Amino acid sequence: MEMPRPTPLILLATSLLVLALPEPASCAYPVLIPVAKDPATSLYTIPIRDGHNHVIDLAGPLLWSTCASDHLPAAFSCNATECRHANAYRAPSCRIAGQPCKKQCKAYPYNPITGQCAAANLVHTRFIANTTDGKNPLQQVSVQAVAACAPRNILASLPRDVTGVAGLSASGLALPAQVAASHRVSRKFMLCLPRHGEGVAIFGGGALFLLPESSMGDLTTTLAFTPLRSRKDNPLYYIPVQGIAVNQAQVPFPANALTAGGVVLCTRVAYTALRADVYRPVVDAFDRALARNDAKVPAVAPFELCYRSSMLWNTRLGYAVPDIALVLEGGKSWTFVGSNSMVDVNSQTACLALVEMKGVKAGDPSAAAVVVGGFQMENHLLQFDLEKQQLGFAKVPFFSACSNFNFTKTQ
Image (cartoon, rainbow, N blue to C red):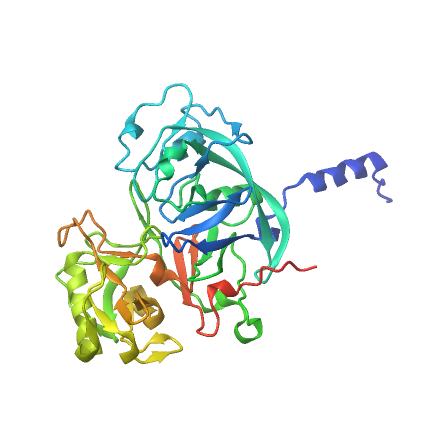
């Protein structure tokens, strides 16, 4: 029996329905944003709105900027999901954040360096970025977002050309979640922080190729993984570190020294900071392993161990000094070679780029045991997978750098 043929009207309705279906997340290209390092503050910035820079903050729960005429008011009620996200994490230094919500939602953006905060309205905004195939920028896209509109007086101590902060935490109003919602990409992002030039932030997964491309291929295939942990009422990213090794030898610590407070990743601090009960054993182990008292020079604040740089061997991996490794679960290690453990403080002096936390008692569980700073993360590819709750990490090969992404658009 011959089946009845669909009428043109049915075919048209079906076609419109197919066109109206949302594009699967797997088909959307990731979003690319360049990252720069401010030489005066050692903070990292991305261009967000009309080319205005925002400091990136791995622990930031919000996207906020100074108020602008193109911001559209967003009248969220106190019970709105956006209001709950905006107030999920409150800076301990922000006393006004404890006030009850009345009718219209308020957010409390804060300066990650000074801790200064302000009550602010939520607004609708957008910024222009590019999609990417991991090799080049592809096409411009408009990313819609909800941001807090903050007064200019909370910008103190941030880079001069900055107008706000782009939070990168797992919060619902931080940049990763907002890009994922706006462009239907996965809730993961990659950071490749530069020492000089422009590095890369890619939101939504995908590959990453750095020049010379023919020598390396997709860097994401070299990633090792460790769990990303979180703590209640705290937006910081924690990783489970079981020990620290210097030249592959485990450093002895007091019991529970690393688990008390944990190990966090932080772009707010320039150099890795260690609590006193962790700092002293690591620095002493490094000093013994290097065994170059003949090259030592007086300390240069904020560093303790400093050397005459001309007396240290220089290699393609930086100074020839003992490796320092964070020993992770499953026998994995995140290793820092001379290029990430030694810093030139002047033309004649290089110092171990670790600092001791101030104002924190040894063993205090309320303070992190280790805060991994920006200098140590530079020229490493870091992938924050918020869906699988894992961190991918890999050292960029010595013949390339995070600033070697090809920002030239393909035709």
